[in-house]
Length: 283
Image (cartoon, rainbow, N blue to C red; front, side, top):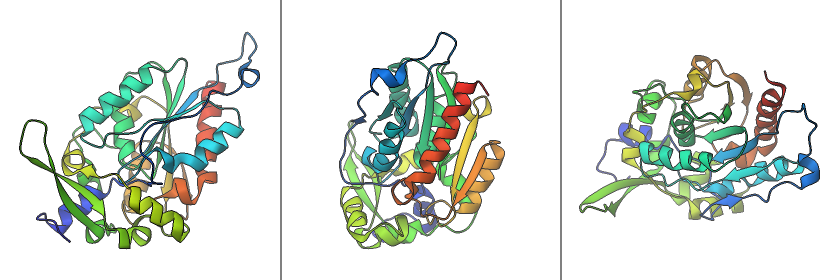
């Protein structure tokens, strides 16, 4: 590993990973046809689903989920996450939420879970949080701390540290997964060619983002759902179960790798739809 950091630090740091399919930028699904959005005077409005990716990923990691949600007539937004710092990333996603009209079901994968926990705090339109193999920090906790709570992550052995220029001068550190180890570490079970594209297009995350403590925990006041990926090699499955239990989330477990939105978009979509139904029914 090319990092001056300890293996333990990088292991924890990188836990935040998420699936990358190789295209950066924002994925905005076209709004559902008007016919699918009609509702009677007493019907609650159908929420918009906002999908937040994690480290080593971009919005295209949600492709299979977006397609399924669209087939059910749902509005979907999947913005690109900067992956530069928890406070700044959360502020950016908060601005995206502010642009959405009506109720929101907010979904986060991996590091994206920490982002949605902070971005949704006291937001009047976020009605449900869905965590997909994700971090669910309490205020004062970082992604690194949560990973270190339980053994099982092998991410540090598969990562490399890169340096990048900081706006005010100097250099920062960002983390990537070695391409030759990407599929085994991050996307086991995903077709080889797909995993190769994901590895080539992965977006680095700064070490600082993974070390930065959360300042809010929206899951304390907003109903939550959680999908545990039982074959996860980034975030230990035991940590995922522990965080889900602490958040009192409605929880399912899927035998899948960390990149579960790519390997198993069906169960991911089903959990999101459960949250959507709960919001529409007012429960």
